[in-house]
Image (cartoon, rainbow, N blue to C red; front, side, top):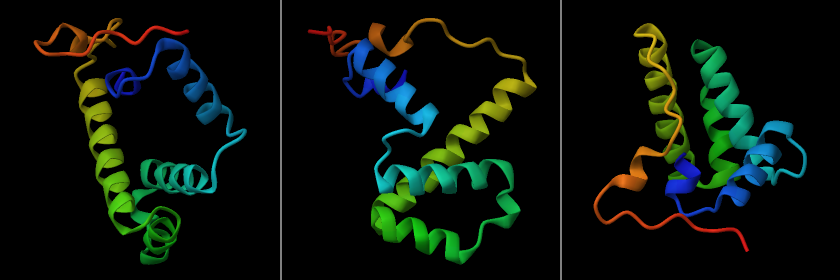
Length: 107
């Protein structure tokens, strides 16, 4: 949903999701971010200063810390949703918000 909110069409979202899930054709920055986020999610106690330095080298300081913050937030929200057994939303709730951009159509 976040990719759609960012303005991607359904086709673009599907393609990006497929690429990220498969790990095929990722940029070095995407690979570094994925590696860090997996470690942060699975073994957060094992994240070291060297891991953060590697992420900063790949993404730059600002984007690295944005990645850490955003991944942390998403992991937290997933834990809360799981604990309360909240169902996944089937539609994008942000589309109905006042001032929301209309859905981008695939060419």
